[in-house]
Length: 289
Image 1 (tube, rainbow, N blue to C red):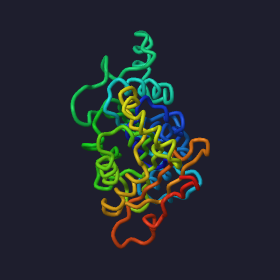
Image 2: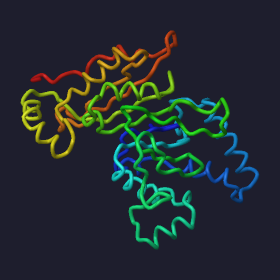
Image 3: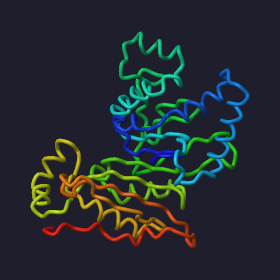
Image 4: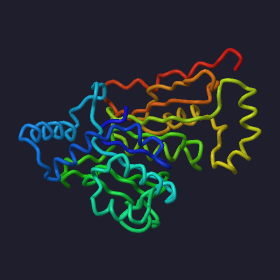
């Protein structure tokens, strides 16, 4: 479901990286690096790239491409791990000299251009691959989010993301509503989507009581408030953030007793056609809730 210009907030150790299809990014990056290609291949890639960057692809396309990937996290340590996984996922985009240097130093988890990733405040670019098509930033997503990569520096370059992904992040941040506001501000209106995979309060009172009881100790150990009402937080944000709408809320996996949530949001411009997500009813409770 991640397509177009993609932003992953709280990318962490990169557990989701293996689920992205990097082939099109690698192809498009190689097209700009002067690799030997037939005229037909170059023309095919050029037309597809123009279509993607002009925003003419549709969200319900069967196989839309991943145009760029940007990951953000506040922790340098976890970004080190993500960088190592990226090195394995897209080795074609890493220079031979850099690979040899990393291997010689025994850096199995990878490093950036220097011995460690940046530690400066703000959104600091830590990794830049494929002419900016794959990037990692160190920064606080609650404060600001980096813009999509600029393909040519022109006025037509993208300013918003087509897909914003976050998994198990609203349970950990200090101000989840503020983070949702930042994500909404970075999302392409109408066609863009925010996709959240979260955990929180479930269907049953006895389970929620257990979550409440052990929430402080769980937070001390893992930094996660697992008893938050994620659906309530999301719907409250949709009520206060202009244009933000709930497209769907699902609670998959019956054995999770409703504590696992899949949330999809969109941002609708005032007066735009479509977008009735705000009318999506709250997920149905179980009989014994």
